[in-house]
Every structure is written in C-alpha cells, then in structure tokens.
Length: 147
Image 1: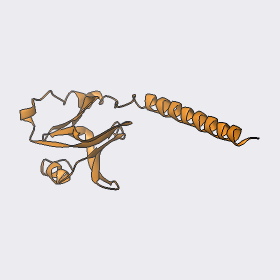
Image 2 (image 1 turned 180 degrees about the vertical axis):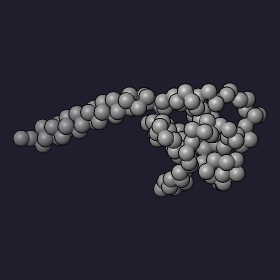
Image 3 (image 1 turned 120 degrees about the horizontal axis):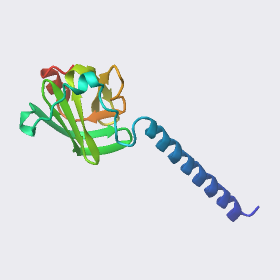
Image 4 (image 1 turned 90 degrees about the horizontal axis):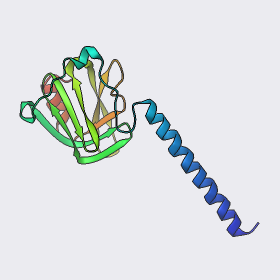
C-alpha cells in the first residue's frame, strides 16, 4: 500500500470518529434538555420565583459559566443574587432563575486556573451548570444565605 493510501485511511477513520462523537454528544444533550438548556423547576419551586428588576438584586457578579455544553468566558455570564432567588444570565442561553428553597447547597469546584461553584438541588436540574467567578463570589453568596 502506498503512503498516500495509508494517510487517506487514517484521515477517513479520524473523520468518522469525529462525526460519531458529535452525534453522541448532541443526542446526550437532547436527553438533558438540549444544548445550553436546563429543565424547568418543579412546580412547588416555580411559584416562588418572581421577575425582579436588576436593581432589586443585592449582588451582581460577572464571570464565566458552563451550561449543558455551552461555555461562555468572563464576562459574558452574570449572576444576579438576592436572598430569595438567583438569576443566571448567559449570552445565547435563556435566563435561568433559581429559587432559594430549591437549592440544598452550594458546592465549590476547582478548575485548572480558577475556582467555581455549582448549585445542588434534590431534582438534579442544575447538575450541568457550573459558574466561574473570580474574587470573593462564594463569600458574597454566603453572606446572603446561599451556602
């Protein structure tokens, strides 16, 4: 077999593997609500979420986020925090509102270059959401009752 034919076979195999990986990734995300989406809150928590104006929030944090396959870097994600709810605004993703009653805890995660956190819920609806904020974001959340 000539060297050109061997290279063609390698490229064909690489292309087929790449296409298969993309198809599997898209189907997996469809099962979790779709690319960049999270499932809606349970009805018992949805009734506690209200539409607030930006000025009604106590703290506004800017940073990065990963939402079910959509990754945005700093400063394209905003986390607006009040004592009763949080709203995550990520460019190209529908705003995610989270009631304080729904959250069972805030888990810190470490990345190679920064620290982030995740909101834990009993339903697991926010398992595919990771927030990356610099500074004292976790401390500011804790001061407002988000542990």
